[in-house]
Amino acid sequence: MTQELNASSAKYLRGKYAIVGVGETAYTRGSGCTTRTLGTRAVRAAIDDAGLTTDDVDGMMSYSYNDSTPSPTIAGDLGIRLNFHMDVYGGGSSIEALVGIAMGVIEAGMCNTVVIYRAMNGFSQVRIGGTGRGGRSALSGSGLFTRGGGLSSAGQMFCQSFMRHMYDYGTTPEQVANVKVIHSEHAANNPKAYYKQRTTVEDVLSSRMIVKPLHLLDCCVETDNGTAIVVTRVDRAKDCRHTPAVIQSVVGRCMKPRGDTHYQAGPISTVAGHYAKNILWPNAGVGPEDIQVTGSYDAFTFTTLLQLEDYGFCKKGEGGDYVSSGVMRLGGKRPNNTSGGHLCEGYTHGVNMVIENVRQLRHDVDDSCPVGPDGKRQHTFDYHEGGCRQVKGVELTANLGWGTPGIGSAMVMARGG
Amino acid sequence: MALEGEYLGMPVHIDKTNREYFDFFSYCGKRELRLQQCESCHLKRFPPTTACPFCAHPESTWERLSGCGAVYSYGEVHHAIQPAFRAHTPYLLLLVELDEQRNVPEEFDGLRVQGNLATADGELAPPDLVRQVGIGSRVKVLFKTIGTDLAIPLWVVDDEVEQPDNPWRYPIE
Image 1 (cartoon, chains in turn purple, green):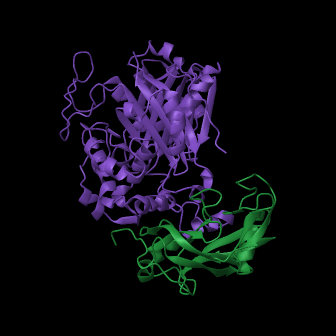
Image 2 (tube, helix red, strand yellow):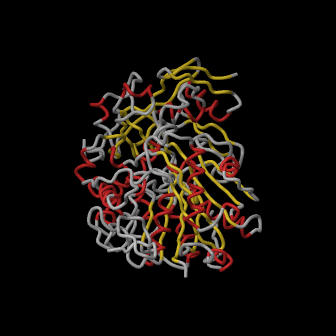
Image 3 (cartoon, one colour):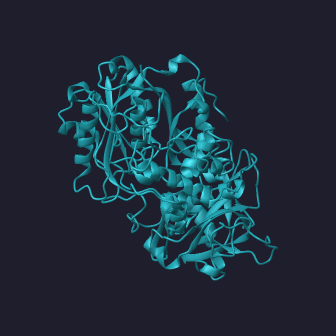
């Protein structure tokens, strides 16, 4: 049943496309404005950041759970005439997939430059954690197993995979809590992070239980924000303001067998990355050992851990050791989610982790280091609380996006010349 | 034609056009746990689907199972999202691996059913019972009537078989 991809050929566009602009609004709980405003501001910020004008953009994409504003409206507000647009359904695992689609539509001659955004009032309007919205409609068919079984939020849907990982491999609550601890250290060096307070393992384990094995602090924050990135061809990127983040490889919404009911197939402590890695690394021409910074989706502490394992950053079952060893910490061998990620910076369904890696590759993350005469920060590489969060000499990053245990996306980016 | 009922204050309506689920829950109403078995490759499957996930064949028959299995994994909800469940925390989200078709068609595959742990009279399990169940616990199906000719499967501790000495539980109670 395995479909082998020949992912080693140059025709897979390695090194031909880049992210040239990134933008976001403030990460808040109470934006006081519509997703239309958030989307417009983020898209405009990303275009400005790229050193482009709205006239340079002719493609637009977004994703949502029907909780956002579609691209014709955002483009309309900014006076952009689009040659291509597409608004798709989905959350986590969308952004990397949409980067791949943007490359494809540009390659097909359908447009030149694509802005991708996610605009959400994820706290003040539609909370992903669940508000009971839709709770009044009748239970019908599969709904008797989900809502009818008290099984509806992301944490409730994923908890059995996390619990089984602990059973299969002896992963401990203390090990997993380190994901939050480390991401909170990174957030403390990120002036835009919603939660900048450093957290301890004890803080995580003493926070109230949501759904075992997830304490409150094992779960990500919910926030309101717009985030956007600009994708174009590398030869156009030379006219842009910043060093481009060049896309080496993309995997989009790759599935486990029976991905819709992933708990039926195989060990449930194995996630989609186990399959996605067979596309990601050959396409990129590098392996996990070459990656200097990771952005492993942290909807929960566990999602970071399971993905790092299945993409091969450590042996299967050793994720608990990996996340508690210090490897993922700023100053460690391979920092993860240096912005603080979803656990601390803000919840964007994956875009902020891509934005952060783009900035890391520019060697220009927006920490508190002083700005020099060239407009770039003079990074100290001193990672004390409130200090620097730029990783030294970053050339290669990986983003590992999570949809469910059964669905994942990924992307490798390199620092452009 | 539809199956109509109510569970924990939530209305239930399964239309006949949703054929596979209509059939599954109709059998539950007869107190029979039946899963689809492919007419071509003869593998059973769960949840109900419109074709065989192993060979794509569209036709199947409904085969009766013992309703016995072991807890393969679980989650324990302390913060309920839905109002209907708030009075019942903590409650267990069981993933029950049925005794039939284990490690088929591949190693680590199985017939796994999502469901809640319940008492013998079909109420969501109280905290002291919740704390007795973990990975490896032996459970059996219990049908709770929620409408005319309509029941849902819940899971109870199987007192007729030997239980593991220490079913695996999350290390912090």
